[in-house]
Length: 423
Image 1 (tube, rainbow, N blue to C red):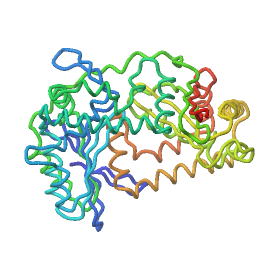
Image 2: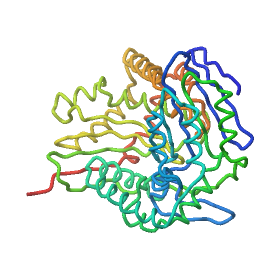
Image 3: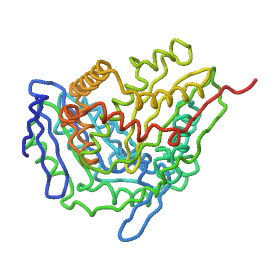
Image 4: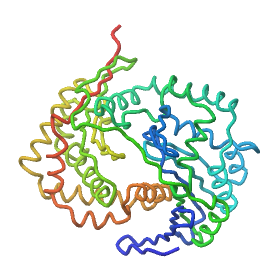
């Protein structure tokens, strides 16, 4: 395990690669009682089409999320219960590009880590248990489909993307998960839950060598081949300009999204993330002139906000909330982006926004979970997230305006609305 010291933020990360290809990152926090472990695979909701043993497989939407649910089952019972018995607080999540399993605890860390690595690397499914889970997840899907926030977001993605698997709901649909079997789950586990496709990150008062030795003892000796994936051939144009759905809501809600240019893996992704975040704050952050103007006019309220997202082969910026006139707000966002590109930003406002964003990144280092997830996302994306101070030092106002000029245009925009049902 080799230490890397980041002088500008005062952090040290021990990095290593096991013979089976597993990446390990350990961030020592001497004197802290809490310890945190995050074990993740580069496999998420977008990975529905991939090549295994020379053959392309098309798997049902939602299968990565389904597999996450089933991974806690073991021959002996349930891994969640075993971890909880040891005083750990375990959980898991599936995103578009990864699935992560984690726990935090103050005691029995090595025993808990052994349990975590074991159940994630050794699947156990039966047709009966898979069928039972379908009912549970189907109920979960029906619940989120009744949620206006979920509907407006997913419909925005489907308006932005025509072919990219970014448009697929991570949970899938009730129909798509009905095609999942124990065999398809085993195929997906065999493809993606291999050490060479995974990373273990641990944060706390820990010995990096002991963490690496435990992983070496527990995990398979072989890492597994690289798995080609197909995310779809996405054109530059948006799929549709507007989408509108009536639901049981008291006032209209909206998201306006912009289909940004995708960013290849590498250090450029970290720069794009920082640029996108700063662009959001300059354009419609709650200190921006646009936010203040729209708020004073009663066109938005405190629900308004947005952010920049980066996924494999896809990137987008969006904003929204409740509004009595979503189309007017979307038009004002575009007008403000055009104005900023044309006139620039006041230097004081730019520097304040830069400092606020840098401070937010710095505060993120206080969270063990945030550190672990950031290091994981960075590894999968080919960049080092703890190099953000160097990115901030190199940014100019023109860099941010160029980002707006290239990405926040009328041609790249969509509007997703949820409106009240008529009585």
